[in-house]
Length: 448
Ligand code: GLC
Image (cartoon, rainbow, N blue to C red; front, top):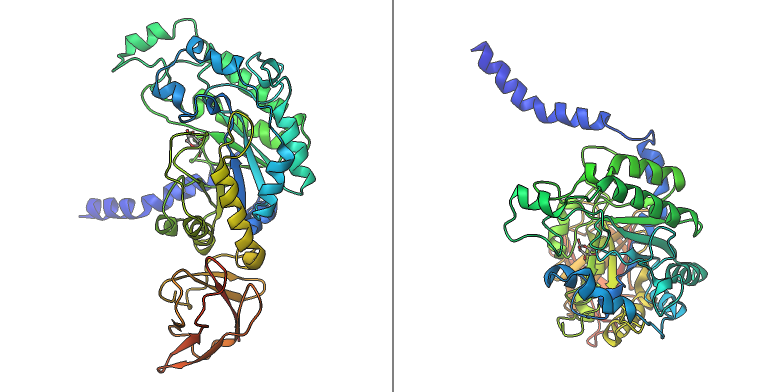
């Protein structure tokens, strides 16, 4: 009997014990408060631009084309030889990001294909050796900084070009149902130690040559049989080095260091629906999303999201307490696709009138129910509540809001919105017949 009780107690408390064990497992000495301070600008700004650009812009059929079509280095070589982005104008990229209200930008300095947009000493497989003839990362950094946009680097842990990166389940040259001995044969002579050193060298270059880097987005781990995880990257050593080189940098969670309390700064739910973001409440996260289905430029992919859908992603992310990074895949000429340009412009039009419901905002306190067909955000500093009208109607019931509201107005023009009692507990907003010229109008509620 006693034994059984002990067993139950052990079962009940084991999550706590393991939690405690996790809490103890730390790489550094930063306190929770210091972390919050380090990340304050990022959690405030909420909205960033992702840029996936590399040789895969030439085939223009997904940034995983080398994997998808099992292309060899030789077959991929044309894209390197012909990479000539003669319309690359990062100043125009930066202006478009800024006009859209994006406060930070993260560029793929190297994606899984292994091609480097920067002038690395450790490889010849880089933009300066293509017809582009220069360090494109440097120009990106200068242009975005000049617009006051924070600068981030994406760096792929995976490398399908480096000779010492061992062939694994993701690799373009992966065997069909490979046995251990097949992998061993394919990887004969490859030395991951050399690749680990290569990554350290390149990340050092990225973090020492371009001034202050605000974000590092490492991608990604797939531990398990014939996969790769923290030990393959020496993730612990790498992260320690990163923090030493750039103490205030913000690092994503794809190094496979989940067991460490400080193994990552933010979670990265990818291409998820707004509803699924609810489960991250209270955590620090950024959802990454595309305008259409792919990250790299994909000529024949046509599932572009509407402005309404994009705004819902932005508002929805903030309403669940996180950030949104929206991706652009520039063409091989170096410009944003016309659909991306127009979407960015439309987001900008909305942000001009409504950014106060995004920056510095988060989910509304529990005591405020979400009115039908709306999304709520809340600014804890100004204590203003924002009702986003997804489906416009002239009357919106605020359930249970009686006695809580001092004043209401449209956010884009500060025009008064009248309200009256609705039943015992609720209020109803009276909105004009004609929907304001905002894709998603926002009512700002001044609380009592
Ligand atoms: C993925 C993909 C990739 C993309 C990234 C962005 O894991 O491998 O192509 O860069 O996520 O989140």
